[in-house]
Image (cartoon, rainbow, N blue to C red; front, top):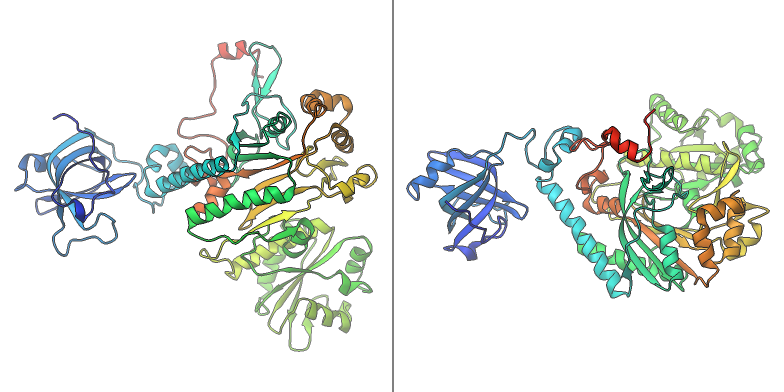
Amino acid sequence: MSFRYRTHNCGELREKNVGEHVVLNGWVDTRRDLGGIIFIEMRDRYGIMQVVFEPTFNEAAHHQAKDLRNEFVIAIEGTVRKRPAGTENPALPTGLVDVMIDKLIILNEAKTPPFPIKDETDVNEDIRLKYRYLDLRRPRMQHNLMMRHKMYILTREYFDRNNFIEVETPVLMKSTPEGARDFLVPSRVHKGKFFALPQSPQQYKQILMVSGMDRYFQIVKCFRDEDLRADRQLEFTQIDVEMSFVDQENIFEVVEGLMKIFYKEIWNKELSIPLPRLTFDEAMEKYGSDKPDLRCSLEMVNLNHVFLNTSFKVFQDQVKGKGVITGLLAPGCGDYTRNQLDVLTDFVKKLGAGGLIWMRVKENDLEAPIAKFLSDEEKKNIVSTLNAKPGDLLFILSGPRLKALSIMGSLRLEMAKRLNLIQPDADPKLLWVTDFPLFEWDDETKRYYAMHHPFTSPRLEDVEFMDTDPGRVKARAYDLVLNGSEIAGGSIRIHNSELQSKMFKALGISDEEAEHKFGFLTNAFKYGAPPHGGIAFGFDRMAMIFAGESSIREVIAFPKTASAVSLMDDSPSTVPEEALKDLHIKIC
């Protein structure tokens, strides 16, 4: 019997099709034999269709159907009928009809798969990744990839409507410091020299601005040789954006327009714009993170003013030494046992805290190990500043500012988890975080590094401090944060060579090193570079959140494992000795 291409897909037939002769192609999802009548649920990426093999309708097709098993690939011909009363399946869009079969072709048989092709499958992720071609048959995975495709289309349509052009930038480029290790590609032609895979198209998109392409975007693959986690892969996808003759507000307007479309088309939600904004300092003080999750209502409070004249030496040292004393209210947790408090103390110690101060709020007092060191006035001010009530629990951490705030931010999220303050169906929270420090100090190397990248512009009013007080300088940088995850980050760029040289100097990059690594960009600035800025979206992470997943591996067709290998095709792998010789490489 010759193969016929389908007239309909498996998710398409409805009551209006009753009486039609149809051809369907797909996989056997389930098989049921009920008293001689065989019911098959056929599956393709569009849905599921029940087809019926009845001996009195077509004996030859019924006889063939006895051989069918799950995941066989089949083609059927038959007539659509309304299902008999009482056999309808309202859970399926096609559940009011089925197809009576008069022809069956088994296009391919299948071994029993190593796990059920169902959304709810209790199988180790490594097995799923080894048999990814089977895993991708699951409706949930197909939905995720189709949603990702839709986000691609929405992105391209949006930027096209707004006069952006998509320009492909090189995959083989010069190795430059971008914050992580480069993937290096040895040159066969130029012995001892290497290309790098791009960590981002940063310098190319700035070159495009110098070239007069005033509105650029690209959906682009990027590469970073770094340790993996749930929201990070060695290769990842960015929506890369750059604009000329703009300031921060122009970029915010463009980005918010795209996010409004995503909210509506993916989540069917209305996004209110302009988005709320927090400065880096505000985000750290209130939430202990530069990517705060605002779905949790808990807020940290600075207590330095409460202890300006304290005799408690631990707090006294922080007030005098420009450290921070930060407090967190855990409502209704005053009955926590000593064991529960010890677990939380161990939690913050593992993050680098020296300890955790806790206080139970009583009717007219505070119960705490340090209570005897505090004055009545200090106790009263702690309670009022944190807006605490009897039955509440208070936490206090002190130490170097950013370190202590970050640890308390982690404790905040831990308490939110314990108190179930972030529900799966909670309204998503999207915001801008602005005014990041331009530099961050590294105690190990005793030098400053660029918090974002060395092409980020300082605030113009802070330029004078770049030589004398780099830690004081704020950047014209911004991050877009969704539900506690950074989904995009960017900045207004440095566009003149003099300020760029000043930046390199502050980072300890010599003129010779700067010329060697970035000369092509800084030289381009000398030929009339426009003011410009941009942003890059972490597309995988954003898709993960929109899909309601907790790992970006669930929205990438062929991801690597946490140990950076592809189990399906066994990569990375060894290569022949001859190939290494061609590349002038010897394995030690």
